[in-house]
Image 1 (cartoon, one colour):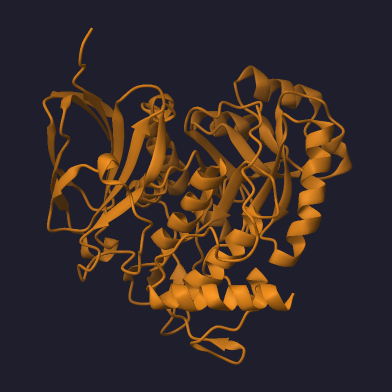
Image 2 (cartoon, rainbow, N blue to C red):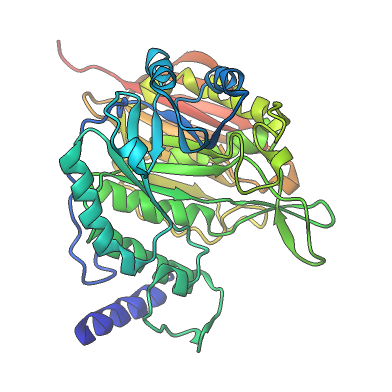
Length: 448
């Protein structure tokens, strides 16, 4: 135990001296587990869309039709009445499933609609060993059923994370909220997780969008760093990244404070989604659908079971992204690069991304904050990229860039649901505020 604390303290000092840009691997003495890959009842080779909180009540036949219409494929956290066999048959017939509650009723059901079990939400590090035992028990019962564990985000306190090593910059139990301190503790938390739990999916909920009493829009400054830490852990230990996004908010704002804003705009939903997939997210899970922990009228469906602006925003973005959802699954992520992150209007100014190899990056020309997710084709020599405008929403600014792809003969641009093929090796775009695009690049074929 003493050795572990000394090791963690030394790693913390190293990370602080390097401004937080260090690997998850080795942040603690936990040896990372290369996760065992499972064949689940859902397609892992495409981008999935899910949601938190599906309430089963007397309006269920209607609300589930709207669920399908919104392009959602699975809910997590089912409340209200228990789903019957007929209900589960409906999900299967429509190509959907559920991440079911962890109670005896659902644990004992053998049905293709049970894609997984909602095992644990936001555990502290001291819960990891017991969770590993439970995960292995569930896999032994059904290796094709996902035991879903959702991790804490980076804005959790050291006490919540369960990482008790005292770092320079912390005074007693009152941490200074600096980037390096947060990154160190969070990296340690993730290191302990991947060194203890053999599950091939890492899920996290990050709610980055705020508003103050003046109506000014804000963004959580460590949003991208949070994603970057988890994405690196996934790449290095054979896991998929799932991201729960903010699809709701609260209304009460204390004077001088920020509150989570309602996210009933296409722009807010689009921005979160493209930022997540820039780091290789394989599932976007909206919080929340019908019932949940936010103001009820900010959910996709309000307490009366009526569709809200958030519903229609999610539906539109899902329709846009579904155009490339299967194509996206053909590529593997190598990380993301933030260009011009020191721009005074850039979101995520504290981002210190893990380094991306030069062979995976485009040749970029821009003076504005643009996030670039870098991918290579799993089978072939093609590449893919996600470009996202990272000007803070309050600015309303567009972001222009030019990206060249040496050796390319064809570029396919997926933008707001439209697919455009461009012959050549250069792409020049001006992205709207909070806009993202997905791009694939075909290389010149050599030989026959």
